[in-house]
Picture: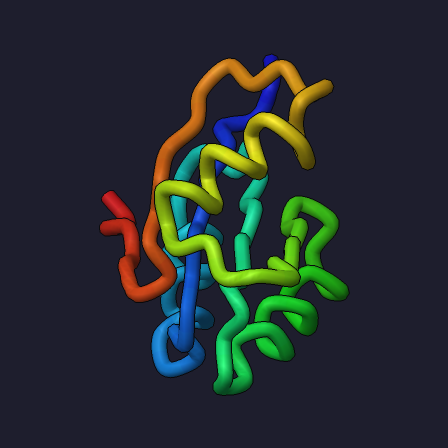
Length: 102
């Protein structure tokens, strides 16, 4: 079974990005992957996302080279970065969101 894919468009969400990741780790179903789309953050969002990715192979980080905002970033990534991927389920999880653990 393919993993549940969470796409997270983010801009300057360093204050809550670890909490977002922690909420994924607390899920009963651990068959997930997390794709962080860093939209040219000016804080340390990119560094935090890279650190998480370096420690968890389920996490991928893409750093936009130009400003895309959430919807265009998702659209462009699905049509370029992940065009060859075949996802079963994709959920959008903003960088300042967290999942409940039950």
